[in-house]
Image 1: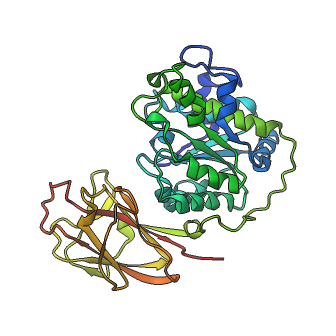
Image 2: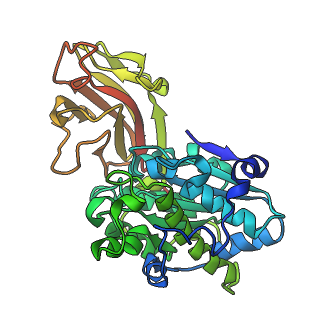
Image 3: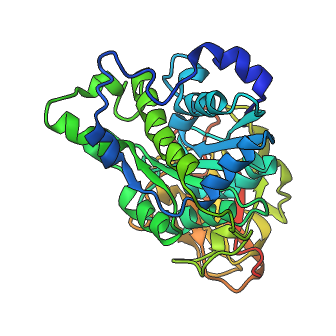
Length: 393
């Protein structure tokens, strides 16, 4: 769920936790060195848009900060929202420009990657017309997500108000993440990029820091980890404040896509908005999280939906225990199963791409028929369908 904080509300929540450029890093385990900061700044890129945010704040105009990512962006394992990296980022800007009205839009969604993020960006983030957006999906993405990640970046950059975009690369255990894929896209678009992994992992590998000092489990930072991520982000923001560049960025002036722009032009239909053109026993129900789903438990036949675009993404309430339990076909073609060799087993699945733009029909069938409602491991619940390549131009 998107969370919004006005300056008045944020002042009550965050007022006693404002971070200055040197605050909050004196106590163990916050041993932040110049070398760590230097390693974290993957690239300053083109600071023009970030300088434009600073100029707007200096004029005293309202500024909206947006963040989109997974559970880390939500603030998981921070002791309270204001101690998350997003809360601390907001507090830093508030301290720098106390005369300015700031708002935070938190579009984090736990357990999701940039493919789902690209589908929900308009509804959860871009509606607020953010001036600065932090994108954090380096621990939730994988090798299949380059197209979606680029599409999300392009969606933000193409907004009429020319928002600044900062890429944040967190890490999972043993220093892993998808920074390699994402940083290539960031470099292509000249984006400022910050790496929590590059700052911290060499310290842990050398024994100068301990994993539990910053990370609760295998991926989620504690308060110290969120504080470190925020400090790295604000260092980059500080570079934008001091950069002497003219704010001449033109809205929507993007280069040709590095991979594809199909995920720049998307449409999302949740289960409640989907009307089957054929239904062999699927039920529209309220899922475990209160979200409407099309439930295939006990269905004797397929369910079919019409959609518009050149590609299609299906989002399930949970990843089926075996991907081959779901069969589908497009426009009456041969039935196929979800292929774990081309995409990992997860809730968000790319069914097809590269079709001629237009109207198409997807038909889904559960291989396990007559599944009981309480058999969670074998149930198939469709949360919604995301169309890609909806419009081009």
